[in-house]
Length: 481
Image (cartoon, rainbow, N blue to C red; front, side, top):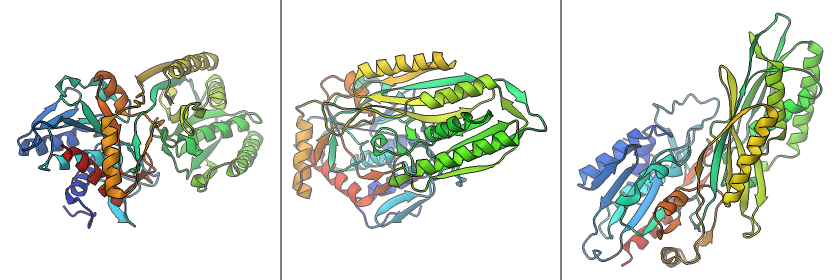
């Protein structure tokens, strides 16, 4: 295999990561990477275990001189978010990622890179090949991106370590020491499929060109959500002209800010269609004055379309009501920690199916009471708009601990290596640390990782020099006697 990353150390980390990029590993499809990890462990004669959901646990005993040093657990997830540009023909079920290095940054061609969290897998495996360390325990989980299912199902009784480094953070100068919990919600609107008449007119509305991003870590940046914007455009159009929705589809993952959304509308008259077009164009011009610099490539398209059916009046009206009033974005900032989002929601996915339309939302909060509140709010909204509603994949947050020996050790090593002290913070994104800490009380945990940008979007890229820095710091902590 010809590797594209050259001149960065350790070579093994980058080569393993590129190996992983050649193996399809979207959420629910981690088997190939799990096979790779097991083969890696077996070749070295290490203890490995794969559980019934696909998590892999590997243990390597302490090397000479480290027998009395406490074991350490390293943890990351095998799955990646599979997002691509609309003009990409990449098949995430079979195609390897196409990689390139530009100005010290590693990119994939038109798709997510999966550095979140493939770079953790690569670092953990490379650490197993080092020869100065206490007992190393490595946990590689599945389906983190779609509900933290791997961490939820893992039997932690196999773990002996009392300190843990999670490698699923995205800023090398920050130690994460707490995170939000969350919950996912689906709204389902049934519709009756009505046959189109020869006189009917159809219009396609598209929202494209938005930057997208992580719905937790980047929700505070003011990025425009394509699904929310489409709802706004349809609502203003519906206020002046009657139409029926034919189909609406947007976003790819509930934990990614939607970059694109497409809707097809049916009109009974040319006059109604013209009115709708006029207000959609006018509203899109207003939006351009509101959006962030990250979303300047926004494009709102209007074009002719065709269809032999459309959705009934009641379903259309109900979905317009929902899109008009559902809350998405930052809902509350923390009163305790300056600049921290405390409570948010993301309308991540809209899917038109044969008998109904599915809307998927991800809610996050550092307070369990607000997750309870969001469930009540959305149940009430579902009743008001006539939708079926279900909640699932709830996960706990990770509470900040004022005292952490592992955190102090990492700060000391980082400062020694790079001449500056890393910051310590709590993030609004969800991490597996919340689940694992609740299952292993007393575990001393930190979360770290190299600089990566625009994760959960096709603009995702990894800073190679930053990856070197994090590797050096982790290596020094592991070598600490």
